[in-house]
Length: 92
Length: 316
Image (cartoon, rainbow over all chains, first blue to last red; front, side, top):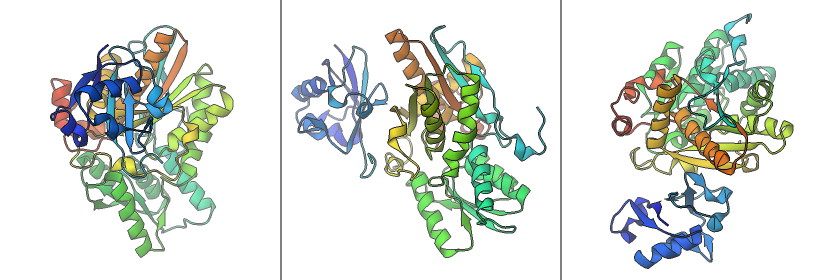
């Protein structure tokens, strides 16, 4: 199942500078685990203790996953995931 | 419709169904045409409410100077009302906003103080607060924290939408000061059980200098997350693409932040259609495209060319 993941500039050192990569999984959690097999270290920058890191925003088809099911949000083939860093206070 | 003065003609804007962009007969997308207000934007509503509240409170008296951080529309609305009511208007605006906005503000007699592009509206707010401290006699209405801003939408925009479309299921608007979403959102939540309130937030990607995410760090005092059901983050490319689609498909000539709201509206429309649910989705056309003509996005050959044309400019 192919899901396009857009990578922010600050994390492109894990993707050889690529702006977007493909991954698979039925949830965000599975997707980040899958991505980590090819882009070692990426998952740790986004996930902490099984939850999304506080200063990272993740969007599924542009919708903020904190308003969906967080890291358990379900994915479907063809979905777009966007990772963006949030500045301090941005998630207030 | 007859009114006793131009200022009295704020509001009562049309709500139109978009037959080509609506996914089906069961899932309809409706546009609330706020560009039909006296100065051409939704901001006429909060501007007039904030001024009249300050007058009622005795804060604003004849000859006063009004100071406001604004990326354009609120300043234009305040400047028009200030001219008609006899106040002086000073706007603090990021330096990378379109030439049309500056021209309109000057036309209404406002003084413009430019704030640095870096930090966007965030920096404009900080600069305005510094200026306010130097001029204690000036009145800063401060749209980001003034309860009369959502108050205007609670009292007018919300009731108008519900009267025109009692079957409304979703309300979508841009997330700037948060006034529209907080005001309409609270009103609809009281009247329509289960209504979905959707914020469309601008995302500048790598386009606007080094601004990315700096704007996101600023949370207006008015913001109350519990009013929202969900939040969409819309990049420049999608905002521009939808602005052009709205024009090509439905003949609605709107500003670029409206494209972002439409993108979120079509996102929730697609979800409703997939789930087999009926939906009446209202989104706000915050202003017309006039002030953004110089960006070239409406006549560019392709979305890619239009996005390139927009490079470096704030659009929401």
